[in-house]
Length: 438
Length: 167
Image 1 (tube, one colour):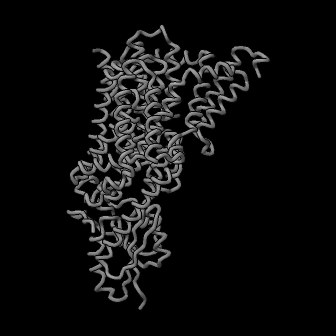
Image 2 (cartoon, each protein chain N blue to C red):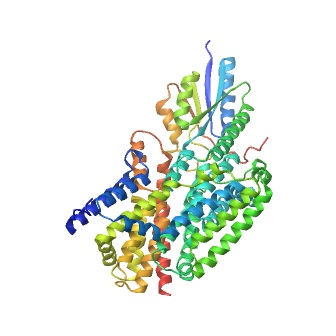
Image 3 (cartoon, chains in turn orange, purple):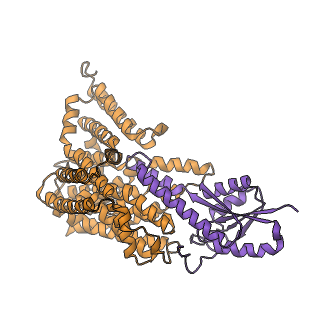
């Protein structure tokens, strides 16, 4: 609209900032429990309608981020097929058998299994698929559910920076910054292992009284019960093994990871059809279509804000706060990302931070830029554990319920998050800084 | 003489403790004693799962197959716990509810017409609080004390050294 009647630059800037701000506040507070995707898309549509971003620029932005969209799709499809094959149930039962009846050993195994799944299939798979599987398992074993539920939800994020594919946020940030696999692993593998160790240690201390004694392995279902089609299950294991190797090769050679994820999903689809295991409805229920709308909306909004130069200002603010040093960049990046992910969500926070850092291109020394990028990945990946429930909006909602004399378990989760996450952030950030110096 | 209806609240590990308490009550009440064994499937962890799904921008409800598996496991475990407890109390009425334990206990006590609610001050498995002194009463027992319409008998429970074996 305003493309026809051009507005002064200042007015355009203010309008764009206002719409972006309202969108973020909307995502943060979710009025009337509206879906975040709707809010993000509404913000983007308003910017387009007012001519604050041209349709061509918006389209170019979305097409330019094809790798992110397709990776999300491939990742969700891979997890869905693996779930249909019974892989998660089989792994959980295996973890229980390896625990040799000991409840504490089972908790440790759940952490290790969650780390493995997060590393290869991303944190979504651990949080969304493994968690209910473990829930069912420990219910059958008559063990306290909460520590195991917490373990799954925490490890999903704590282990989500072992590899670039371990969290879609990593792909999102890396789509703007070329970070080779070696650098990623060099700077983030050790902090990830340390954070996982801290997570396990604190949980063992926190739940030392609740998780104890033995469980009866007779209550465990047999592997045959959970694998409906052994041929497809074996095929699925083979394909996922190949995908894991291909991820590493593709990361090292600069091949888009979405190609690997989609190729793997396609192979699993062929297998599912071959063994009559293809169930479109079940598959569709694992794919979050609104996620694509949410990301698309946020990409367009941030692109519009970039056009006004505001992201550059935000980047300069971050640079100023960091003092231009690597240590400052790690601390400011980690803290800013961690707090931001809890205010809104880690997807928009990662987009905003990446855009702001990209706008500073040339102003930052290579080390400082690397420190900011790695800290952004680290903070956006691990930050959601701070409030566990993911965003401040949910926490506020829980607090309101508490005021009304309703006991809400979410607040217990919040307490654990507040206790564990700052420690993990501190340890991880310190290690990243030390590794940057090496 | 009217019946004494005692509602015993199970948490999965306190059947023995409740059984011992009832054994002491039995000589006093005799034939007037009617016992209800209640087990509540806690739906809060499921609520947390749904919140977690929302964080990942997914619909809150679990896929139907997964939800059914989970609920079946909960129901079977609940039945097992009730049957185990029934071995300590002959002729007890078995009651199963779903929801928040503290609210369901109060509601069930009212509906069942309980004269006395018997529960552990804190689940023997919940090791978060001390066995005596401040904070020795868990949130479930605290809520029941505050809201029950009949007398409440709190027991200091201890976790059995060996978990009940599957039968």
